[in-house]
View 1: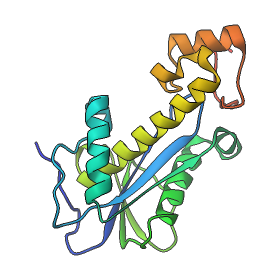
View 2 (view 1 turned 60 degrees about the horizontal axis):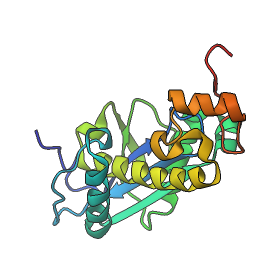
View 3 (view 1 turned 180 degrees about the vertical axis):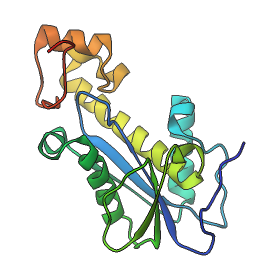
Length: 195
């Protein structure tokens, strides 16, 4: 089943999604994408349903063919300060700030959002599997975050961030147990089970 291109055809709408909410380390990333009605991007889907190779191939297509796109992030320190839910919304705000144009409508993946300026928004549960612009945002957020975690892995190789990207895998938790935390860990999260 192909994803819908627009929620309202004659409105300048931006799809927004985040990546990295459930991680124990690193920032949360978000993206905002306004698609071009005259150009189609084949294969857009929820980033979790795509192979890594497909995500990077589609990222190139999105960056070439979208009318506007931008990526924002909120650091682990900021996450610890405001909580991960707010940080996800604020990273979307940062992406929207960089978009270069103010959309008339935001399509938000999920069931909640913090109002951005005076722009109308619609929350859509599993929106990244329904609307192309949200799927495109999910792909950008995911690939930019993955790139960032690879850089952090070079600095702290004991946590297998090149593989788990900061998610709470056995290898990541083993790394915390053996080597302690890094400046990139989210200290308000449960880093080790039973603690």
